Image (cartoon, rainbow, N blue to C red; front, side):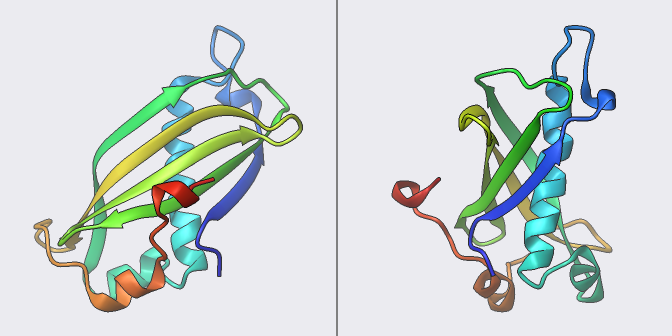
Length: 141
């Protein structure tokens, strides 16, 4: 099980905007997809959270775009957990074009762990924390 998740995709036509490159909002969808895939890889798919009556709700996103991506290019999305607090978790992302290792964007999402029926924040259980390796900033990709 990987402490740092990796998803690769080929940019589809539906991701391209009027400027001829990947639309900025597409990155948010890919962030969510990568986070869910990484969580599932570590044994916590959405169904398992639902079974214990819990879910993650997004508090905020931050994205810094560095280079554009274009139709047909392969993009690698790296994602990892950067920290836990009582009911918060910070997840980071790096978007890379593998053929030349250019960093396209860096991003982060602040997640709040919540009770599914009420939507209220609850303490992250030990068994959830134990599934994720927190990556120290000096060890980030």
